[in-house]
Length: 176
Image 1 (cartoon, one colour):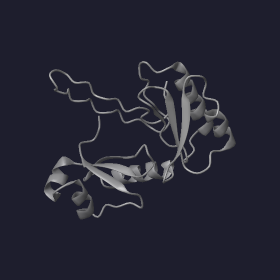
Image 2: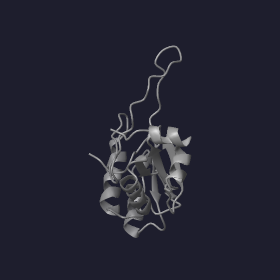
Image 3: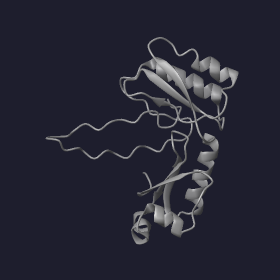
Image 4: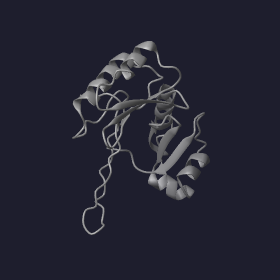
């Protein structure tokens, strides 16, 4: 059962005496997919299913998020909500709230440009994806390339890699 990108960010628990166990890499989910987290009420996932069915493949539909306390669903959207989507978010069910946040950029445009960056610059870019907040694109730069350039941002600039959207560069390998 999946809908909505990267629904929740989980926190790490200390392993022993203040040490933290390294977190497993977050799965790269496609648009309209989400991770089912234990302890989240079925009503939240029912709403996500209805939202996904109603919003479809709209380029305006961003990454939904579930609060850590599982009481709020954040729906990210570019522009005005269509009436059918408004009807879904206005009927969440008892015990949790829905908040609609406007994105700075159309999520579909961010996803398309992230795919372009990864495809056209595979020798520099390990992976790229639209940021859940809808404010730009996360770009992982291959470690060897970033090291030779003096950092991830320098590697992008040096290779002439750019976008009409803000890029947030980090060093990293392609997610599994």
